[in-house]
Length: 421
Image 1 (cartoon, one colour):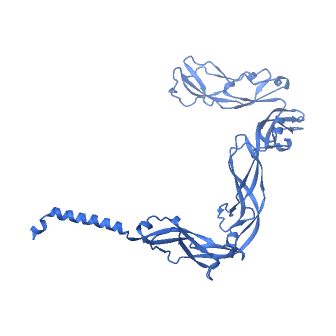
Image 2 (cartoon, helix red, strand yellow; image 1 turned 90 degrees about the vertical axis):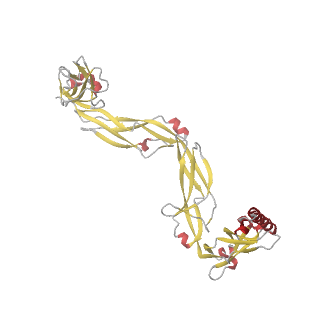
Image 3 (cartoon, helix red, strand yellow; image 1 turned 60 degrees about the vertical axis):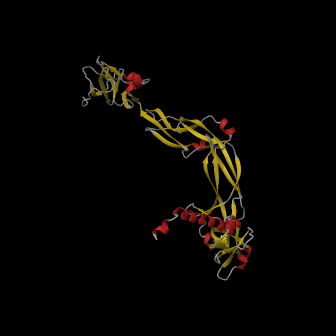
C-alpha cells in the first residue's frame, strides 16, 4: 500500500497543480456571479415644495444615506463605484407616519442580469411649522490690518434680515451675524458674506432647512490710518500766597490717534490745561483727552485720559529727586573699586531756608557725597553727606548701600560681610 502512494509521487503532485491551474482558467472564462455592498450612498430629496407650500419645514430623522448590495457577473460588479447609483426620496409620497420609500437606480448598463438590493430602506422626517422672524445683522471680525491702521465704521447692507425655519431651531437662535476676515488691508474695502446663525453662547448653528431674505450680506469696512502725537499740559493760574508750583508730571506723554489723512496731517499735538488756582497742596486730576481732540480724530485703545499731578510746596523749602549718579565718592581706597548696590534707586531730598537762599538752587548745589575713608572690601550702609549753601538746611537724611571690591576681582568673588553703619 505504501509503495502505491509513493510510486510516481512527483507526477502525482504535478497533476494536482495542473488541475488547480486549469480550474482557475475555467472559472475566469465562465465569469461567476458575485455580490458587493456599497455603503452610505447619499439620498437626494425630491419635491420639497410639497412641504414648504404647506408652510412647514422638515428635519431628516433617518435615511439620508442608504447601503446598496449588487449581485451580478464579477467582471461587471468589480467595475462599479458609489457614483454609479442614484438614490432618491420623493416627499410628495410622504406617508402619514412621515416616511417615504427610497428608490435606488443603477446608472451603468450591463449585458447580463444584475440585482440591486437596498433592503426597502425608507427616509423618515420630522415636520414642523415654519416661523419667520427679523434679526439685526451683527458684524464681527477676525485677523489683523496692516501696521498703523485701525478699523473705522463697519456697515452691513442690509442690516436686518428675515429668517425662516422650524420652531425647534428658532428656539436656539440668538442672533444673525457675519464674520469679516482681515488680512493686512490698508484701505477701505467691500465684500459679500453669508449670514451665520448663532446661539446665546456664540456658537454657530447649522443652516439646514433655513432660508434668509438675503443669501449674502454686503459689508463696507472703513480702514483708518493712525499717528502717535505728543501730549502737553498747560498749567493755569497761581497757587495760594506763600506756595509755589514745583513741577508738573503727567502720563501718558503721547497717544495714538486715528482718523482721516487730512486730520492726521493737520494735528501735531494735544494740549490740555489744568488750574492750580489757590492750591496749598498737590493738585491731581484725570483729564479727558477727547474734549481736546479736533473733529475727525479719535484715540486708539481704551486709554482716553491723561493723569496730571502738579506738585505744590510751601515757600521756604525745596524738594529734589537724586539718584546714585548724583552722589560723589570721596577717599576711595587705592586697592578697591566701588559700586552702589541699588544703582537705579531714587532718593527724595528736602531742604529748607529763606527764599532768597533757596531761589535758583539746582541738584548739584546740594554737594551730595559719600566718604569711604577707612573702609575695606565689603557691603557698607552709609549716610550721604551734603555741602549745602549758606542758610540752607537738610530736612531729611539719606542712606545708601555701597559695595567695595578689591581691584582685579571682576567676578564679584570678594567676600561681602554684613553691612556696616
